[in-house]
Length: 569
Picture (cartoon, rainbow, N blue to C red):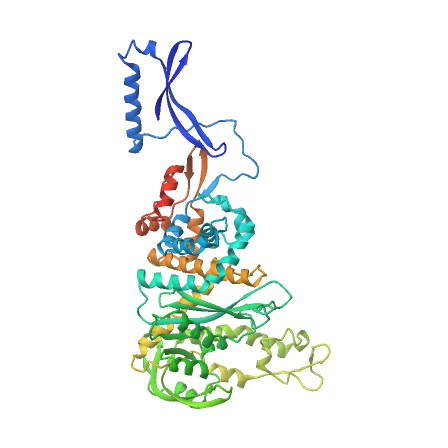
C-alpha cells in the first residue's frame, strides 16, 4: 500500500491505494483501499497530513505483513461468470513438485535438452505430463487443454508435447538410471531384495503390430496388449521396467530384463529376486544362479512332482502356530531343465531350500473362489439344455461325459448324460491352503523366507496403482516411440507417487493422496487473491512431513508463487 496524492482543482486529495497485477490485461492496476480527504481540510486536524498518513500507511503495511489485518478486495456485485473460463487452479501439485525436484529430474532434463534448441521447455512439458498423470490422468490432448489449472507458465503447444515425447524416449535408460541413483543416495537401497512381476496393458484396436499383439490378457480382454515387466525394491519403489510384445510369455521376460539390468546398473551387487510361480522356470533359476543372484520363488503344488506333493501333504514335520497356520522346510536337490546355447534342453541339479506352509485363510479363499464354478457345474448336470460350449466355461472341468454339438456348441445328452466329477473336486481340494516357496537362501529361517516372499504384494500394489490411480490403460498412443514415452511417464509418475506415500509415513494409499492433492485447488476471487477450500489428513501430513503449507484459506498470487518456488530448491 502507498499514499496516493491526486490534484483536483488546485487542491491535493489523499487516498490509500495499492497496486496489483491484472493477469487478463497483462499490466499493473491500482485499487483504492481508503479515501482520506483533501490536505487543506485535514490540516485542521494534523500539522502535516501527508507525513502523518504516510506513517499510517507504513504501519498498515507492517501489520499486513505480520498478518494482523485482513486484506481488502474489491468485488463487483454485477460481475458475471464467463463461459468456458475456469477460475480454479490447483496448488496440491506442490507436494509432487517437491519430490520431482528433490530427485533432480529438472536438472537432468534441462541439461540433456539444452543442446536440442527446441524452442519449448522439455522439463516443463514433462512436469505437466507427470503431475497430471497422478492428479488428473487423461489423454495427452486433454492434459494439454487443462494446463491452465496450474500456477505456472506453460506456453507450449500440443504439437510441442508430442515432439517432446519423441525427443525424450531415447533418454529412457538414462532417466531410469538417474532415478535409481537418486533413490539410492537419498533413501538407500541396501537390503539387496528386489521384486519382479509381469502385467500387460491393452489397446482398444483390432490391428496388431510388432509390439501390440494378442496374448494372455490379465483382464481377459481380446484386445492386443503389450507386456510390461516391473522391478521394485523392498519398499515398493520401482527400480526399472521393460516392455515386450503382447504374445510374450511372462516367464520369457525374466532373462532379457535382468540382462539389461546388469548392463544398466553397476551398483546393485548380489540381489535376491522374489517372484511368483509364473516366473519359476529352469532357465530363469539357472540364469539367476549363474549371475550370482539369489531367488525366492513360489512353486506350484498342483502339477508339481509327486515327491514334492508328498512332502507338502505329509503332516510330519509341520510346526503349528496360532490360528492353525503350519510351516516346515527342507534342503533338497532340484533338477531343472535349462536351454543351452544350441537351444537344447539339458538337466541340471540345483540345491535349494523348500518352505511349505498351510494357511486356513488361504484354504477358505480357495474354496470360495471355486464355489461359483462348482455351483455352475452342478446346475449344468441338472439342466444341460441351458448350456453350450461357450457358457459352460469354468464349470466344464468338474463335469464328466460332457459332449458338445460340433456345429452349434450345444450340450448333447442323447448318448450319455453329464455327471458331476466328484473325484476331480476332491483332488483339487486336497491342495487348498498349501503353498511352497523355493529359495537359494538356505541359511535364512523359514519365517524370514516367508516374510520376504510376502513382500511381493508391493509390486502387485504398484500394478494396481499404475492401472487404476494413474489410468495407464487403455493406451491411446499408436506410434512406437510415443507408446514407449507413455510408459516412461507412467513409470516416473509411479516412482514419485510411491515415494510421496513413503514420505507421508505410509499412512495413505496413492489413490487417497492423489484425490486429496487434486482437491487442493483455489478459486480466483479478484485482483491477485485466491480462496482455497480443501483440507484433510493428507494436507496436514504434507505440512508435517514436507513443510508445504496447503492449509491457507486466502493467498495472494505472490505467496502462491513463493510456495511453489520453494519446492524447486
